[in-house]
Amino acid sequence: MADPAAPILMFDSGVGGLSVLAEVRKLLPDAPVIYAADHAGLPYGSKSEAQIAARVAGLLGRMSERWRPRLACIACNTASTIALGMVREVLEIPIVGTVPAVKPAAALTRTGVIGLLGTEATIRQAYVDNLEAEFAQGKILLRQAAPALVEAGEAKLRGERVDMGAIRAAVDALRAQPGGERIDVVVLACTHFPLLLEELTQAFGPGVQFVDGAAGIARRIATLTAGQQFARAVPDMAVTTGDIAALEALRPSLVQYGIAQIREF
Ligand code: DGL
Image (cartoon, helix red, strand yellow):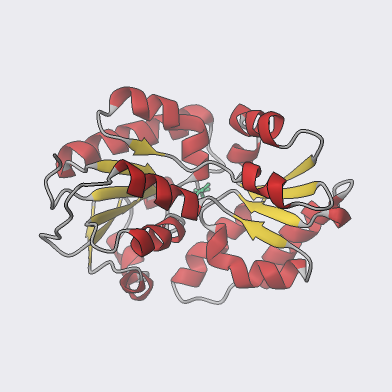
């Protein structure tokens, strides 16, 4: 039986995983959480598969040894689609990944044309090809890399102005693909993007629904920890592999997600 104070470790390259944490809080308000942001490695989207796999497996291994989490959640589509299998091989705790929500999108679309916004690395993964083949047969899945949205999500949570031009450019590029004008469902296949839901809604205009994996991930974590005791021994913490001053700028947002202390890793 897990120690009641053992945390759930949430991992992302930056603040994107907070969109997943928000859903986890709804189901498991008493669960102790350590939120880890690999800001030294941000952005993952422009890195190679080998670089991402090495970072994610190495960091999660070290973090697991340090904090003995009961479960780790890779709250990042890029890291999950590349390194989930490898991390599961090396860690002995349950690992929950973040998979682009192609299945629910395929069930929702009426036009048969689904848009998918993700990082450059995510959209080229065989993992996404397999999701498309399994769940979106007979439908069209249009993928668009939107790296500027990762920075926009980070900026928004630092309290800075969001660059609407960058968001519109990503939306226009997706719409400009053949069939793009018929998109009625958009998969937010990067955990940073639900942080920009208002801006994306504005940029797409009416008639588009958005789906992401966060609620499903929270349900999976609740299932895997069912029957376990939760008791916070210390306030929930966020750690960064980067500069602590940069994390300090995020403190007001982190507080809203129930994070009470910040540290360097
Ligand atoms: N939040 C991450 C994702 O879900 C990646 C952002 C990045 O580091 O490029 O894909």
